[in-house]
Image (cartoon, rainbow, N blue to C red):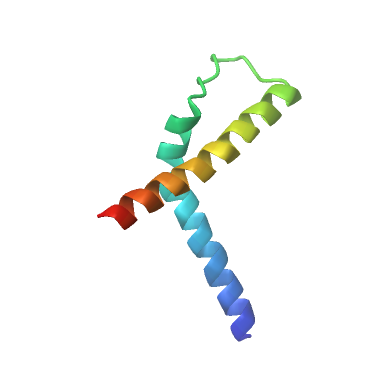
Length: 70
């Protein structure tokens, strides 16, 4: 049971980190919003997801560097 609680706690912590970094992630990614009523193709969605994934990694690095240097 303790392992299950630890795993659940870890997932919650990582989810919270993602939500906290989401504004910075989207800013770093520089992706434009879609036009109203216009939808992306599957390939465009995959490309945007790739950009967000890598922007999130960079956001984590930026935050770590800022926290460690202060």
